[in-house]
Structures are given as structure tokens and as C-alpha cells.
Length: 268
Length: 185
View: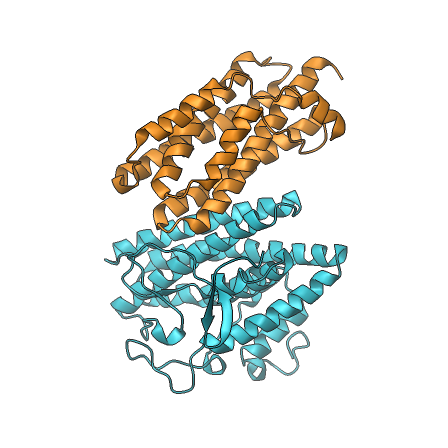
């Protein structure tokens, strides 16, 4: 399973990008993306375009897992097949909205970071831990607050699209949480795969993330991972069956531990 | 077990094998298809084939075979399923699956419905009816894509026709040694 094309990004070896049609410009670093501040028209289109590309990557990953692990339990394969369908519909919905706003495929650069990290890993437990339980859980946080910004910008339709996507993502994280427990119960060594995978993700994240003071390709100052304000979506993380301890850890990682009431025993 | 029940289980187990193989083929095609719209079409149909396999596999258990009992089809048909995943170009993939293979598969499900006992085998009939309706929709979705994006029409339509001809040449889908393989399963 290690027999796949590779690439090196800032010293980290990752799986090479999946093929993309020539209209797309594929980049490797946050700084090469065209993220705009706020909700200006171009920024709205770039957000939808980036999200559409990420959903395309999630579809590729779910399908690759289905293809790479034919011996996985049938019920888990069914979940991956369902995820492939969901991600396909997300691509279609975001593309539809992008076109309504006058956007087009390939209007902005795209990156395939999630694919390149996740599909470098050679066990299903490791991939579920990184793609579903980390990247998609991050989506829960992002999609928890994004609809509000779209509504404030007067676009209820975009907000509703994102809310529907969020609904599906909860199940993608939940099934990974359930199956990871089961896989580790059956084969305790899978836990080591998960730990190694998360360490690998950390290294890859550090490589591609913005550096202090870095400005992206369209002149937007970029926040370092430490400087990014993330609103942890507690409700959806609960529905996705993260433990209270894991939710506390996510809040601390987001740098919001200090704003929680010290008396709140669940999140202190 | 009576031979009629065994025969039903073997036919459904063979359909299940085809569904699983088509699901796996699309799963292999999705990340290797560069163009977004065909990738999405394949991604949507992964779930259709997965559901077909699941329904058929549960029904085999009701027919006193193992849960998710699966039998590879007759060798000539299996050869088609083995060749298909290695097709590389997007237009060829669409043509061979949606014009070459699936119409014939839809006919085979139709034949099951025509020959089944609508009362005694109604649980299977309901499943096969649903699968048939899904395949009609899948074919319509592929036609819709080709209507909107004609660049994905296959330049060599003879290839799909030939594939369809070979599919139609397979008279009996269930492998001749299905009973023997079942004993070993």
C-alpha cells in the first residue's frame, strides 16, 4: 500500500496530489491560496470554491479507503460508500451555489492537503482518525459558525447549504468514532497506528501552515495555527460522539480554555 | 433446502457479487478521474451499488444461505468485470459502464422479475424492483451528464457496443459450479 506516487512539501513526504482537470491550479501551501478577508464578493466565491475542492478531496479519500481495504467489515464499507455519496452531493451543491454567485471551476487555486496526508497512511484506522475524526471534525467547528457569517452577508441560501452539509458531516465523524473504538477493541495495535498518524499529521500541518507574518498570494495577512480563532462546535461534537474529555481538549487546543467558566466541571 | 430456494439464493448471491465489484470499481475510478462532474457521478453511484449489495446480502440469509452470501458470476461475465476497472479514460469509463454493461444488467434483473414467483419470492422481487429503478435512474444521470458535457462522449462508440454484445452473449449469469463453491463457502 506504500506503492503510490509521492511529493515533498517543505521537507515532509506526502502522497502526491490526485489528478485534477487542467482548469484547476493545484498549490501546496496556505500562502499560495487566495483567501480574502471578510465576506467581500470575491472572498465569498473563494470560500465556496475552496470548500467544493475540499469536498472533492473527501470524496476521493472515502473512495480510496473503500478500494484499499476490501477486508474491512461490510458495515464499515457501507459507511464509506454512503460518505462517498454525501461528499458527491456536497460538491454538486457548492458548485451550484458558486455558479449562482458568478463563480467558476478553477477560478482560484486549490490544495489537496487532506488527501496527501490521509492517503499516505496505510491502515484504515489511521485514515479514519485523520480524515474523519480530525479533518471532518474540524469541519464541524467551521460549519458551526460559517452559516451565521453568510446570513449576516444576506445570503440565506448559502447558509442553508452549509447547514445541510454540516448535518451530513456529523455522521461521518460519528461513524469513525464508533468504528475506531471497535477496531481498537478487536486489534489493540490499531491504537498505535492512530497515534503515529496523528503525529504525522502534526508534522505535516506545521510544514504547510502559514509562518509568522506571512502574506498570501492576494496580499491577505495569514494567521499562524496558534493565532487562528476557532469556535469549537460543542453540540455537533457531542452528536458525533466525542467524549466530554475530548471536547475539553478541543477547546483547549482552540485557545479558548480561559474563556470557559472555571466552575464548569465539564470544560474547566 | 429445496432446489428452488437454493437457486434463488445463488442468483441473488451472484447479483451481489456484481454489485460489490461495481462498487469497488467505482471506488477505484473516483480518485483517478480528474474531471469533477464524472467523478461526482461515479461517487453518487458507489452508494447505489453498495445498497444493492447490502439488500441482496441480507436476502440471501433469509433464503438460508450465509449472510451476505456472494458468488462470482459465470466466467465470461466475470471476465468483463475484471477488464472494466482497468479502463483509463473518463469517456471510455462512462461509455463502457453506462452503455456497455448496465443496460444488460438491467435486463437480467428484469428477467428475474419476469420469472420469479411474485408471491412466494416477493421479498426478493421487491428488492430487485428497487434495484431496477435505481439502475434506470443511474442510466438517466449518465445521459444527463453526457447531454450537458458532450466532451465525455466516447469517440469510439463501437467499443461500448462490443462490450454490450459480449455482455449479452453470457446466457447464464450464475456460474455452473455455483453449487460446488457454495459447499466450500
